[in-house]
Length: 91
Image (cartoon, rainbow, N blue to C red; front, side):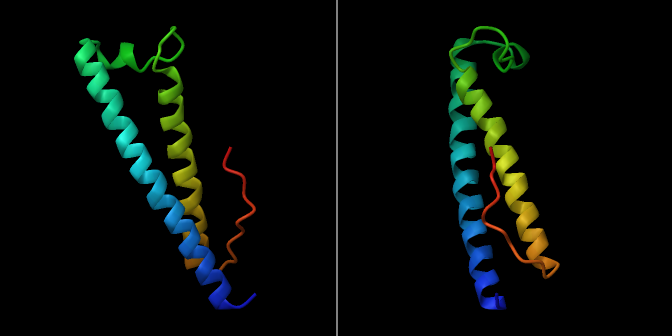
């Protein structure tokens, strides 16, 4: 693989990172609006072990943050002249 291929992989990684960042920002804003409208304390609203209609969205924010961290790890590897592997699973 030449440097150009690895640079293209970095572009793919960063596009995904930015898409996730946008999704996460929108999801967090939506959750906060719902929390404030319901008048529920932060700790109570975001505690997913209790039966909450928002648990799936809260869990999604955690998964998105994890994926963003892994993608940034790939970008950091690129900066160290390592080959980016797009075969990485983020689940």
